[in-house]
Length: 128
Image (cartoon, rainbow, N blue to C red; front, side):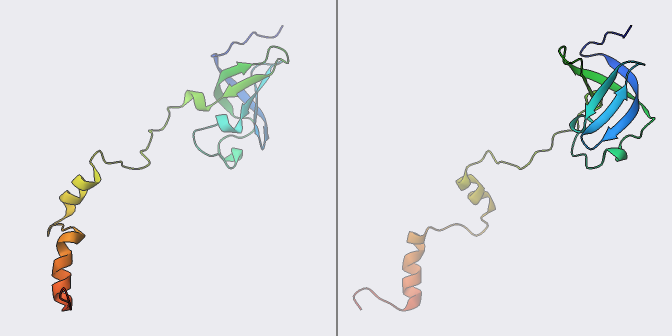
């Protein structure tokens, strides 16, 4: 008689086969489950052989059981601590003007304020 498994069970099984899409795990003499490649670890897995070998005993968690087909989906990743999330970018809470004021050492003058100075420097006078 085959053992009854439930979603959430944590088990130790033996790796019986490796395919490009995942790892087959024998849970007992009559029951086998599959760890999909995306459930091996966090991040991208290029080569499953870098993580497990046929004959290894590994801990897995039952993540899904298809009652119609009897297929058992397993996860190694679910038993690992998730890596810390990295911030992709820093978004300032300050307005653009506040950031300009902070970084401007010599003072910011608008174009209108500088225009008279530039006209004078160019030698052009009104009415000429």
